[in-house]
Length: 109
Image (tube, rainbow, N blue to C red):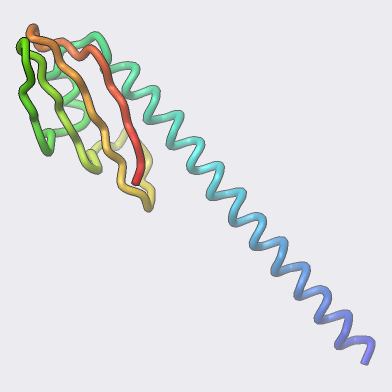
């Protein structure tokens, strides 16, 4: 009887430890991905949009705005510089009339 109770308690704590470790690992991966995406987008800002396309691939959508500005959007960009994840990564880049990236942002859904 004592052995069964100790075995149950050990299994219970092992399960809890595994669940906490899995959540911690997922959080670390999410933080790493956020840092990596932010670093890639910082490298894109202030450069021609062709540089952004060479890093992120062809955009999924281009919206032309007033004054020659454009909005480029990538959904799940095919790049090796950003780690893969289970969530969809959406990158938006604002480009001025001269073709220079003025603002880059990202979000996950």
